[in-house]
Length: 112
Image (cartoon, rainbow, N blue to C red; front, side, top):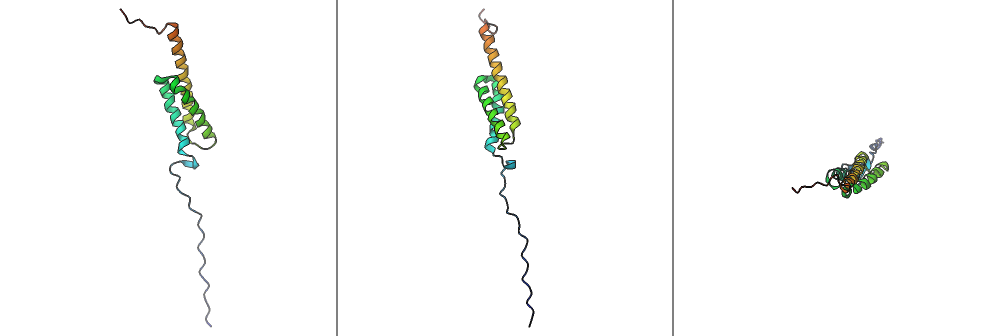
């Protein structure tokens, strides 16, 4: 009788393929990264022209961005921190401007 050859061995199993991450490293979501970007933009705007109206949201978004970065949900906690600081500076400049305006230092008389 003829000898039957053994069946071919199975190829080594491959690990399951993970889906591409779509631009967010380490599983962070882009929605949480937007918090830091918005905090930075609003912080800059609060210094340039809007004061409290942009400074307070910059402070709140900066805090949320730092919290999301500490939980690992965002990768740009530094932007949130900078936006937080700029929001505080913008609010402080608004307070100084209001005080100077009320004290009469910034009241100009343009009528001649």
